[in-house]
Length: 271
Length: 128
Image 1 (cartoon, rainbow over the protein chains, first blue to last red):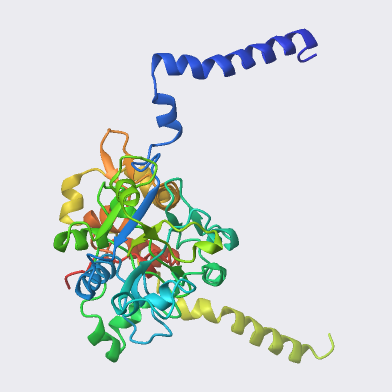
Image 2: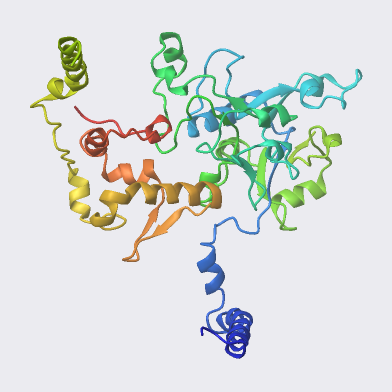
């Protein structure tokens, strides 16, 4: 005879009591310890990252500096061919950045200006919904992250992204160190030996520099912009109503790319 | 036995064919792996975990690291002695073990495994 009904109920009752009381007791005696143990707290907990691009303070040179900083930081190769182009952050004209919002009477200043684009880190990301392996997903802090270990290169995410923010590696990016014509375009690739390159057959894109966020730094493009013009790019936490981005968004009128699609981009432009 | 000669000759040909790899490699035992530590690794004296764990199971640790770093955003590892390490193959491991060819490759080649870590993660340049 194993356990009779009486002792079974006793054990069940006691374990329920402990289950209910255990967490409360832990919270009283060692507050926060339990949560910390279950989840080694990432530095970005409770945040909702977003970026504001102030187009009044942006010019071609500054955009190039931002692009250079990003592509240097993440070992993004220049493949010299638009069909194979890998881009994390790039320039695009108004007409193509904001289709549906342009009209023929817009001033030349806006019409012929380049806009600095990157992944919008949407609140409702269509790319994450279609990924069959969860290689791309939305982190709790809103960053749309890529797990290159898990990407199978199906490119569903590229088809789903309405902003063209994703690039596919048609070949091994390290071929730029071997092919003669590409060598000249990519001197001393990979430039950042603290960051990996990618491999053939995976999709890549801007990750809001999660490796820098984890160290409490701002993304590389923001740092590059800050060195020249302090508020051209502002990165911050939307969840904090007093953060820089929230203050700027309160003060200025801003636009987003293709808002009608409902993906809720978190990249704002002040024009 | 009918056609005994043909069968025996056939058997000998088959056996020789199947045994060619044995004859081919006879007396050429693969060199036992001899992983070498760099000066820096020797001076550090300790790894993130002890050698008895790291030698047979470092890949389990690396797998756990890559999962927690990329997916959960937990980038720091607390060792048993309380020391905190930045979880990164490329930045932390390869900082001490900067001699991939005389450290990692030794056992990997011997065991016939080819982990694809270095397809993406940049290995430190080795002085020849």
